[in-house]
Length: 152
Image (cartoon, rainbow, N blue to C red; front, side):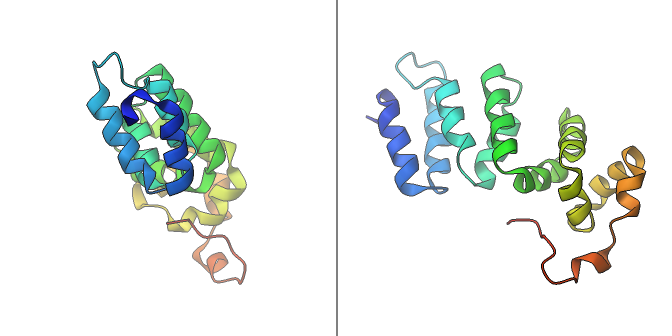
């Protein structure tokens, strides 16, 4: 029933919130090649609204699809700190280095604030690509009350 009714999927996502990502991802995977299944762009739009690591990881994995790339960018705009962390965790995967650096460049203040919390490989990339940013970010800044931290 969920496969044939995108409005019901949207309602499910609205009611369940972030836990709906797992259900929507499963429907997406089961629907490949099924003409009656919801289209990838509709499912991607729903996933892009969910503040959930599984959703952004899935969109990143599927970003070779045009419709999924659009959803991934929408999710990154909506949840920039989460996207920065997820992109940083994935810099070793093909194509993700550029996405990480582009996102870091667009969100320089956020990146500077949480630079010390990123994985070592991501910090190294930032040091090479944006040395001014890396120089102004130290772990001591994180101990200041009110400093931003990465969402989990």
